[in-house]
Length: 119
Image (cartoon, rainbow, N blue to C red; front, side, top):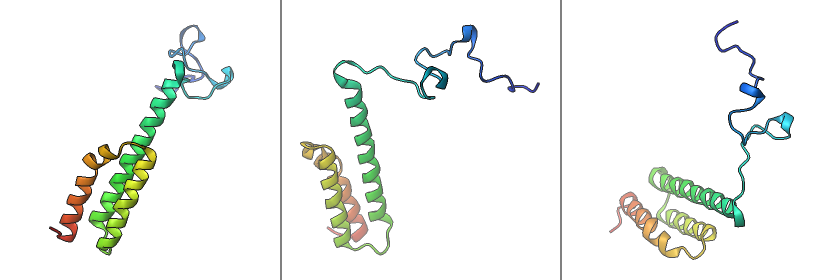
């Protein structure tokens, strides 16, 4: 038998998986590790917020890439993209207008100033 060609169906010592939260298909679970939900649904809220934050970061990165790299983009189209990005960000995170204005507005303004030679 070759190195590493062992029987992968074995579950280690005593027939148990090393991770006690793991459930195999035989146990009625998938390959994922099931996580215990914290009281009050805090785990789901944190996961949801992290997912929305990552989506916002990706969206803003894409908008900034298009503004900086698209040779056919006009100033009006860039301004519209920035306004739509702001609207989408505030839909994802209501009441965070100040945070958006501190974090993303200056970046977009600087990028548009450089790209379209504004001042």
